[in-house]
Image (cartoon, rainbow, N blue to C red; front, side, top):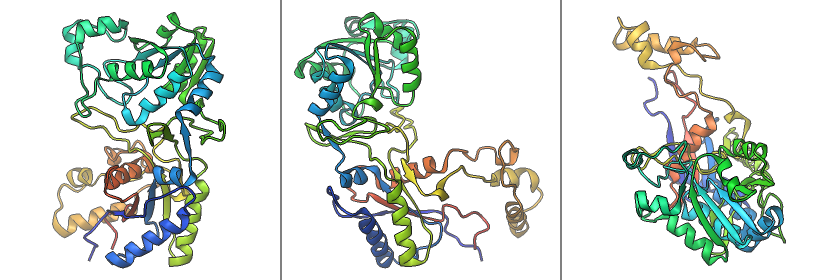
Length: 397
């Protein structure tokens, strides 16, 4: 009889991770203890995933507001700085903004509208339409924005981010100028020194600004891309993927963690004789249908993973087979026919109608989203996720 349970995702509890902790030992032991306690068997091609937060914590990858300020001052001149397209987030960007403002005398903060890059709305589409505002053409001053739209608070956090960011800049000792526009080149009317704070569109933004005559152009990925006075850093992503740790510190995205996932895979192989895939995950890549927020504020979903997680799914659409190829079958005959079709499927189904609607995203993006939803980011205490059956299909016994 075919197995009745498919994919299972378990949150695994772990101790609170501190700098210098050995994650190879901790993750391996937590998985083994959980398997013994919960009665599940470790199998080949199971998946162990750990949140990027515990990796960065174990690495001690932290930096202070003053470290950010020093790097911004060195790279952008310490005078007028355009800060464009940041996301609206107390956790992700606010403390970075404090450091940026401490490294400048004047901050020209340019916010995209009606929403930021990941879907946090400053104003609704309906409100924008009602006022006859064209986000592709119109540049709004702070005064014009207030005249048209008043004081809008984020539906989840209750924060007016325009007011909040303005106060942060003032409190950090810089003069704020706030405007709303979607063409990055608009900021060059105010300053030629620009820090691009967008995440997934940053390379295009930099390219447009440089071509338009900007004097200095950097992205958040280039701030703290190397240590500043002994700070943490990330050579590839800089401040991207950072989170607030304290009122004075950020935790940066983990660096050089490929060796970690390979070491955990090897340790589990030694302990169990099974080859388990291992990955580090950050934000999942999904969109909230109510708040319209796209979750992915990290530069990538997974900064490190073992080779078995490379690629995309190669799956048949069962309902397509049932409704088309085998519409005249039912019961055991239908089940057997579909199983045979799965067994003989092509190694590459891209473009074939029979795979339509099977979400051909990267495996690490799909699995990372599953992990993010399983572990959550609050007080569950499960920064490790153990997944079984992900690579099974309808033929698995």
